[in-house]
Length: 428
Image: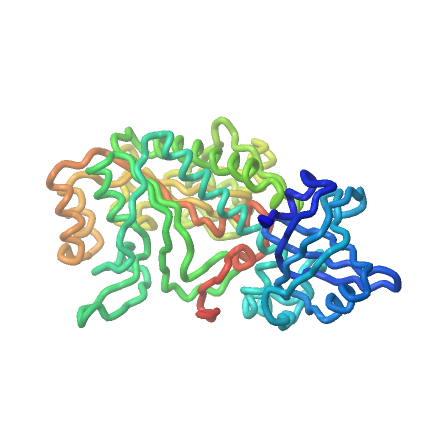
């Protein structure tokens, strides 16, 4: 008899079926016992009246893996409107050691550090696994939106010979006796691949050795990177980003509707045109000094509130960041060279995406590095490609975990990360 999932039981009323999963909970009453079995699709209620089967169920611990063969009976009060009766229950392994928290409760009451210490078990809770389902759906939507627009998925090295972001901290390692680093982003490679495919994207890990200990930073996170050629300026990149966000949120609604319901959240609509303000205007809106070189988290929150109040939008573009705060490969605004053709996208008052137009002429790269006092040699393999003809291009990167955290309302990005890596955590 082939195993079926709990979500399929309603199609088999009156039939004998086989399910398998984890002991989610046991309720031992005087005349009847209820065994709740959890599988990847949900919960199934097993009704036990036979004394011998009850005795076996009483010995089971929560999270023990079992197989149940039983008859499907309609019951409006049971999960999915059906329950299993006249069961045979067979353990598929030894009795499990219960985790240090109750997975059957509606919410995990353990502290976040405890959950992260016991992540393999904590992730089984519906609220934790729901966030990961949303994450998977978002990545699926990201890929689909770009595939239909002629983008090619690429896979670039995560061990590199020099840092991507000049001046940023990197994780150093020994590469067969030579110094190497974990990649901070696929930035250089995705630009080079514009010279091959014109439009490329990548889904992969990036590593930032920055000693942040905040609710929004991780030392390793998943970056959704995009780069496209033959742009007029950064506004072409912003339009693609808007469409990609729509695709991601549409996929979340379609593929992770149950997960959204579990967390009691809704995916927001993306405006047909996301409102945009220049950096100088953003400072005024946020009440920041006019000479402020960057936006602080408090400024981002103020801008998010303004975008919601003035435009009814959860999203806001801030364009024209000062060149001094952007990487050397950023294209300046021809009309205002002190400012960039770069942007950030704020999602509910927090930076979600950084992007913009890049330099595409070899001479401009030499000048940009010289202006910052950077040597050319570490970047020679990268900038040499621009001698061979590169179109005007630009791109962006979305932090997946931060996107899911903002979407679900999680207070800490670690709540939506399976096995986070940060300043203090290297296991499990």
